[in-house]
Amino acid sequence: MRVVSQKISAWIARLGWVWVDGQIAQISRRPGASTVFLTLRDPSADLSLTVTTSRDVLDLGAPEVAEGARVVLHAKPDFYPARGTLSLRADEIRQVGLGELLARLEKLKKLLGAEGLFDPARKRRPPFLPRRVGLITGRASAAERDVLTNARRRWPAVEFRVVNVAVQGPTAVPDILSALTVLAADESIDVIVIARGGGSVEDLLPFSDEALMRAVFACRTPVVSAIGHETDAPLLDYVADIRASTPTDAAKRIVPDLGDELRVIAHARQRLDRAVLGLLDREQHRLDAIRSRPVLERPEASLDQRSAEVTALRDRADRCLHHQLGAAAGDLRHTLARLRTLSPAATLDRGYAIVQRVDGTVVRVASDVDKGDEVRVRVARGELSATVTDTVEGGPR
Amino acid sequence: MTDEKLSYEQARAELATVVERLEAGETSLEESLALWERGEKLADVCQRWLDGARERLDAARQARATTD
Image (cartoon, rainbow over all chains, first blue to last red):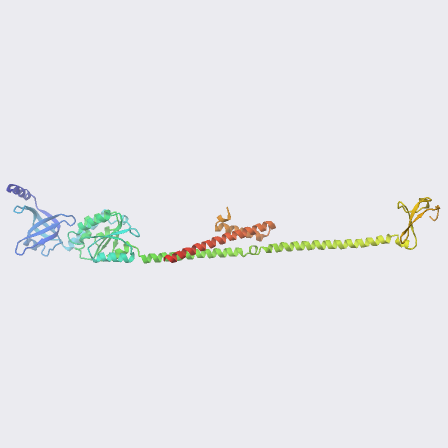
């Protein structure tokens, strides 16, 4: 046992002095004791080491150091044989001041910017209406309440999957990283919000952590940064796909306002109605105008006109025929008069008679008949039958 | 194409042509009568389209009113 312990101790004793940068997770100052124990951890990984130092060293370099503070210390690995524990023995400790922190943040910002982590072209747009929203925030925090309340007020049906994490202190970064991994793997989540209320620059340090920045950049789901107040600008604001000034603002960015959307739809419907009704009215007017044209509304007008034409023609025909009939009647009368003029009746009236043979031939010369022939003698009224008893040739002419 | 399948615009355009020909008055009586009958039919087709559109519009608005 002793040999093993001595060998380990000798081997560790050969390790040299190093400068270490870390975050104080725990500090124990026992009253009266000259040795102070610190638990130093990596800001973003789950790694820690015990540091031993003297009260004098601590008071000289970092008199007001507290848990969560960033420190740089000069130390040598040290094996404590009585307990078999490994620790770092520090002979110089310096608390990293605010100015130095900000300078480091600025340097990291330049580095990440140069690598393209802030490139607007690489930003993803969350959907207009996400199926589910992932929320990474402190348990029962004002930030959590602000995001949930305001998002639900805007869109009552919004669904959240909330992962509560430490939002400051040594476990904040590992917590947030694992929450991000869980939510990014959830297919039903369309956007992830990382929210935290305002705080000091040190409090907000986890939201500028390099490992977290790279994880957010690599995340396929769009990430909304909602850290602190308007004036706070952790690096997460630059890497995230959307920067919300506050948790309340984040609620506005992730879901649309139901009332606004309903108003837009109602307005669109009104315009739709007006457009269609206007069109129908216009077309009705056009159709009415066509139907009221005389040729369609009073088709009988065309018949009336044709009928009038027929009547006129018939009248003309009538008149024409009447005229012709009149003329014919006149002719007839005239002819009759002439006929009467030529009639022998007037001569007969004067006592003359016409003698005809049986065959109707008028007897003009005595020799036209022979003795014993039957003749007819026509007088003015009636006629006689006679027998020729004698004929005498001669006479006037 | 049967009259039932005519679109509103087709029916209206043909109706306008029919009216113009009737108004020109250069057609025979038999043609005029046929044209007039055609015009009435086309006017009915147009009116049916407009009435149908109004009915659909009213039905949609009524449905909306009951769901709102």
